[in-house]
Image (cartoon, rainbow, N blue to C red; front, side, top):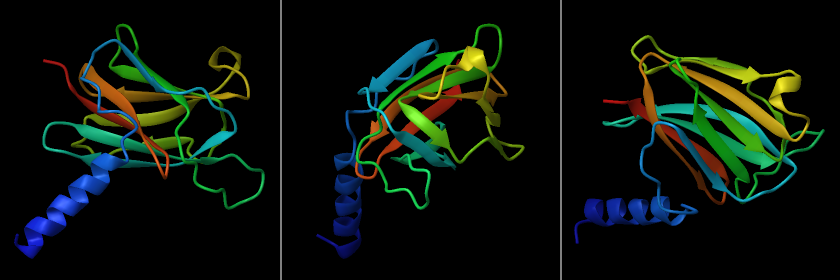
Length: 160
């Protein structure tokens, strides 16, 4: 086996071995995953592009009033739901106590337009974090968790 082929095979096995489950299919209404937990936090949100979809990766750590926070091994419970009559998704992270990410803007050529932290009584208490993800077109999506370190992945593509 050529060194580059071996390196690619090793990289793919490492990437897929960190999946908590196989990625679910794309849907256009609601999807959930993970297991109930408590004391987690969103440390960062990263944006990436794949040939068929765009990706948001939410980095998860253990919540602490002091920094730095230790990375979590598992991602807790998460849900994503399409907002009726709008090009937007609401993502809920149950058992999460804090976040470092309040808002995020995206490049002009992205499917995503804005990520915003939702606050107020209608968006839960101190044990859940809610984000709205605005898109330019009606979205189809899937959400799944990765382990060690914990991450929640939201893949989005235009519905056809």
